[in-house]
Amino acid sequence: MIYLLNFSKQIKFFIFILVLLFAFPLMAEPIGSVSTRFKFLGANDKIVVEAFDDPDIAGATCYLSRAKTGGIKGTVGVAEDTADAAIACRQVGPIELPEDVRNGKQDGEEVFKKSTSLLFKTLQVVRFYDPKRNVLIYLTYSDRIIEGSPKNSISTIPIMPWR
Image (cartoon, rainbow, N blue to C red; front, top):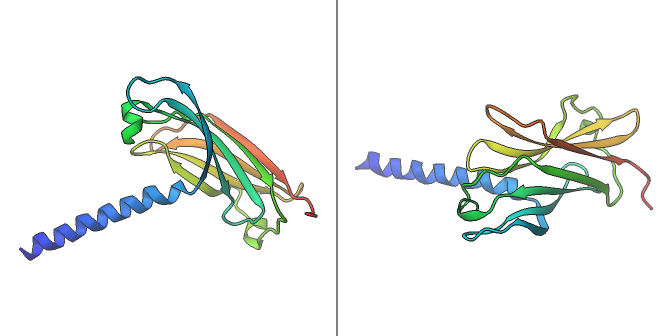
């Protein structure tokens, strides 16, 4: 009996962790959407526009547009969205680069991640810093555990004095 009680707690803990994993990537602010294909059952296929602020750099905001699959599968959250996405990033306030960004990784640093299927597929945004030109570069792409997509988009923010 005690083992069953512990097993129940383990299941609840596992579900809690799954909810956290899927909730945190959803920190983008929805801006709007347009329908691209009518579906008789469930939501239409859409292009959604979302905004997120760089978590490490105040004054840097990125706007993502991405495909969102509708239909019954999309409505219940089991559809796999395509790898199509675009990004535009802008300086929206004064930018002061933290030291760890100035000395950042060559491979970039993940600043945004969103699940685009029930399992294994994500849309990511990675930030790079080009010290020679004093520019932030944001790259968006989609990946899977086994096979990613070469579809990608980049945007840059030249760091300028803010008035």
